[in-house]
Amino acid sequence: MPIATSQAWLSLYAGVGLVVAMCAVCAVAKTGYDLRTGTLQLPFSTWRDRVLAAPKLWWRWQVNYLTGAPVILLIAGLYAHHIGFAVLGDV
Image (cartoon, rainbow, N blue to C red; front, side):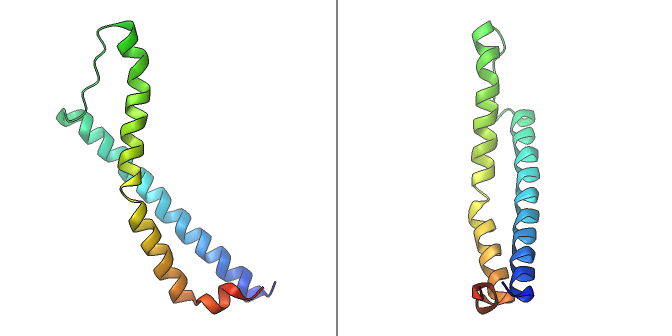
């Protein structure tokens, strides 16, 4: 694989990784906001409610994270277009 191709792929993966990390942090912030405002209410009255609070919280984070997936795909596609698909395809 030519050096330019490997650098382009590395740059693409680093860029997408950065956007994914930003999306994950935003999903954590949105989940915290949902808890604070009462949009997401987790009851802790019984033992069963306490056990099921973690999956409910995880599910809300996943929903908040996946709402950012189209943005991640769009940014990755635009960045790949900027780098040049021809450079990425040189193997």
